[in-house]
Amino acid sequence: MKLNLLILLAGIIVLAASCKTKNKTSENLAPNVHKITAEEVVQSSNYTYIRALEDNKESWLAISKREVAVGKSYYFVPNIEMTDFVSKELKRTFKTILFVEKFSDQPIVPESLSSMPDSLRGIKRAVAKEGIKVEPAKGGITIGELFSKKDSYAGKTVKIKGEVVKFSPEIMGKNWLHIQDGTSGNSAFDLTITTGDVVKIGDIVTFEGVVALKKDFGAGYFYEVIVENGKLIP
Image (tube, rainbow, N blue to C red; front, side, top):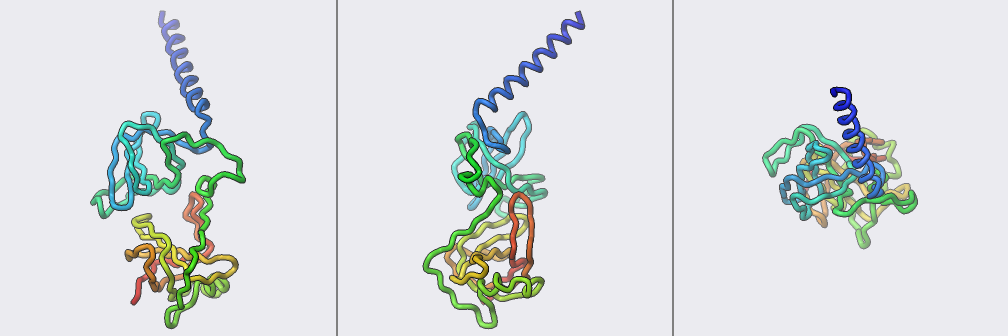
């Protein structure tokens, strides 16, 4: 009797696993795509925080602000995982949280490598903004000079001026911004700066910070050149 019961239980487990695999396969999801149910949604000024349920396991996700419905299914590709992340706006600490770029209410299916979005391949490609022409700060350098002579500036403090084209607050305890000034060096024109200061897209700003080379933060976030601990100066 016990043997028959064990065989029956084993059969149920195998059948459940088979159905689960079949469901995932039937959706033909791309590699590393997760399917979750939104259990709780918390909105802030820049981000949407989601308590997600996947295979009976809960986790928190953070995406760029958008409408997300509780109880609905969504698909995402993981990017950066943070531990003990503090949201100053929410006055809340998340033990672990995934910052996600690729997030959809539709299944994310495989694409050929040539047509796959950069975000899925972990590649961050900047786009040159037209019409930018910013004069360098007094005693400072241009973005083109920095990229052209990056080795000579490694580990040194530089002053650099440009227009803010992207701003992402509160990631890994810092604010992240991209500036351009209309110059380029070695085909690079978009400079990333980490800072504790807050700016807006379109601002013309001058920052002073330390140049670092070949910084790899994981999940495809690799920077050949980055200015760290930037300070906004008049």
